[in-house]
Image (cartoon, rainbow, N blue to C red; front, side, top):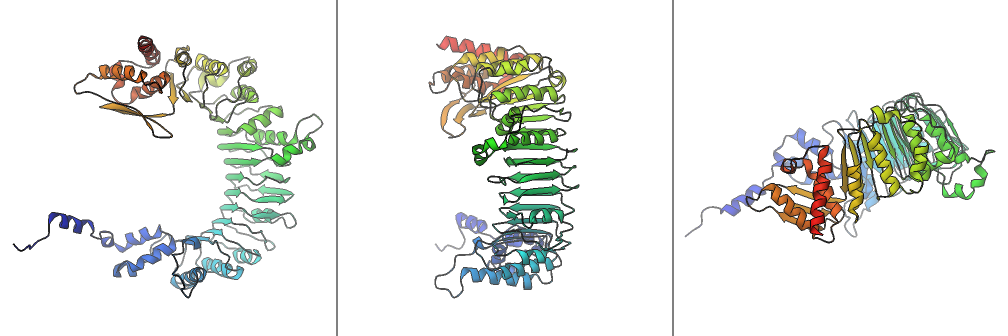
Length: 560
């Protein structure tokens, strides 16, 4: 019999292979192309006759992403080299394809190869002719003077990012009057011209400044003065430098300072800070020459500098202090100012010095609502005694504001337990205490946490173990977070009462020797509000934590 039609599978294959994207309106296709790297977007013209005349530049915003690392694989022995192909493509794009485009919103130009200063500058000039608003440069230059002559006075530019390793060589009275965001990555600053200070002074509208991995070795001082600056990031610019930092930005809102300590600081107090990260400490080179930095009172100038930053940031709402900053502040015998606006405090690894600073911070932050120990405690012995001795009176925040505490890398040390007990006993409005840790072998440590008396009647204590627990209506699956290795799987039998299944799960899981009992408790506590377990156990907070601990403890004892 002669076959006259397509089979079901053939029809399905035909439908699946149908090009539905090409049926979209040209305006939508243009927007899709705008999200691709420019050369990739242009290459789509070979897909079909319809795509041949589509342009990623027909629909604003027009964004150009020119990256020579995206060169298509060259054919061996072809007449043009990849670098020649890239230069021809960029030349034609900027000078011909976009010649009638009134505005280019963004140009990213990233070159792994060096194409010559004149060629690079010609591309920048062409972009400026298109009234470009955002520029990102990542290329090599032998002499940057011509580049900055080209940029000088540009009124359309609002964002500028300069990357790669070249010097700042600015013309006299250089200005970018409307630049609001400036990012400098891996540039070299020289003191003979003070080019970085001239650049910053020439950006009167600057709102956001990033300095990352720049070389300040040959710079005597870095001056950042701006009444409009709201966000400042300084990262890895002082590794081997003795440069001073002058900072006068009274309206700064965000400060992220992750670097080695400057030789000296000249700071004006900030009035409007919302978030501050202080991850500042002496470099290896500074530590080797530390005796050079001590004043007459035996206090290191390096530590005093960190104290100056800390004190200037007392108006902030959110604060993170890294371990190196905590230790420097205590070595400098800092007088902790009042942090009246502080509602969120995060601390790095806590040494003995950190215990002392914690007490001072709690006393100085009456409106603190959230406290995080992001790296736990590195030293314990005598820590709680030092903490308690510096708190003759109960901090105001514990009586009226502190609602959440997160403790990471919990090890079950006695001083840790005492600190947790202190917070539970005195936290009048405490709502959540989260303790993050690895499984422990000793159940008594865990049970003590849940049995501590709590002043707050709504406080929940969660003991969180680094496992993945998938709680479903028909079963429970447990995996390690990091390895995703299956530890345990149990399925609920047909018509089995939920409470019976729950108890059977606990009994069977205790027999799995490589899963500690505390992990079970942790998983169950986490799962109290996940699905139907809460109603099955008939437990309500805050009694649920204590009752659950006792209930599971009785199961544990029976099994042993």
